[in-house]
Length: 141
Image 1 (cartoon, one colour):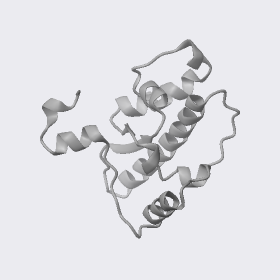
Image 2 (cartoon, rainbow, N blue to C red):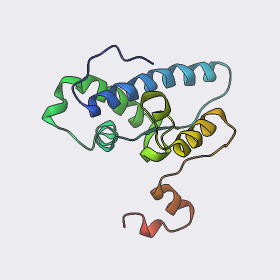
Image 3 (cartoon, rainbow, N blue to C red):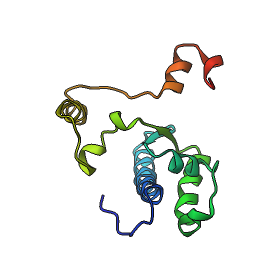
Image 4 (cartoon, rainbow, N blue to C red):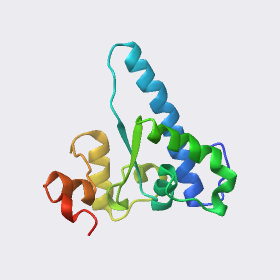
């Protein structure tokens, strides 16, 4: 999706993208519910830690006042349980293939194959992996 707003920072840009994703998510979950397929909480992934914190309401800054409405829109979706925002490492971010030059070529091939489905993979951050491995006591370490 092309952003129609001139952003003032990377965090602002990432928040606009999260908001656009949330709008699509609202529509898709409503459509699926009308078809009889209720959806649970959907995971959205972002590689900007500041945007992820702002989305959950854990971080407020005077530098983000001008896009607070967008921030609240995403935060509301999280509070309603429609979605949650997870951190994705830059090396595993499939969206980078469409937004920047990916180097080295091995990294490009990896992301391309994941995007095309020839190498199916479900990305899990380290915290989620620790929980699934039963090491939930070590999550904050």
